Each structure stands twice: as structure tokens, then as C-alpha cells.
Length: 135
Image (cartoon, rainbow, N blue to C red; front, side, top):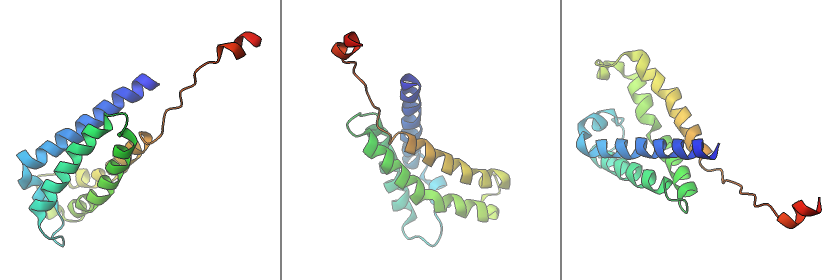
């Protein structure tokens, strides 16, 4: 199970690092999904991109992994309004099937659960050979 969790942690980190990079290489898409009520959409896009990259990297550093997982949960919650905005404004995203826009919502919840899994610390049990021999 530990190796599977490690592999999934690397996949999760790559997902966020890649998404963060996309905030800088394709900011126009992300600016479009920032709800209009929020100010400075380009700044928000760049800021969230920095956090996605940083937290994705920190997730791979054992000392900071748990902190990064909680940070990713906070980030996923913070960007959830963008997914809601897309779902309730399909006319602004005509290039996407409206069903897909709604499917982003439960996927976001799944990502939050996935990040939460990485907040759990691994319990390492070292056998006490003296106790084993006595039994």
C-alpha cells in the first residue's frame, strides 16, 4: 500500500505542478474562468499558479508533505467558485459540453479527498526483536 500511495502522491504532485505551469503558459483560459465578481483576475491566475507549483513540489518533500496536502485542500476549496461559475455560465464556455462543466464539481471534491489522503501520517512499526523472541 505504501508504494501505491507514493506513486499516487507523485502523480498528484505532477498534476498540480503541470496545472500551475499552465497558469503561466495559457493564462487566458484561467482568466476566463475567474468569476467576474473577483478583482484582478490575471493576478489571481498567477497567484494560484504559484501556489499549485509550490505545493505540488512540497508534496514530494516528506518533511512538508502533510503541510502541502492541507495547502492543496485549501487551494482546491479556494478555486471551487471558478468551477461553479463555469457550470452556471455555460454560455460563456460554449466550446465545452455543459455536462462536462458540471462534472468538474464532483471531480473537485474527489481531488480534495485525494489530497486529504496525503494528510494522514504513515505509522511505521519497528519490530522489537526482544519482544518477538520472548513470545
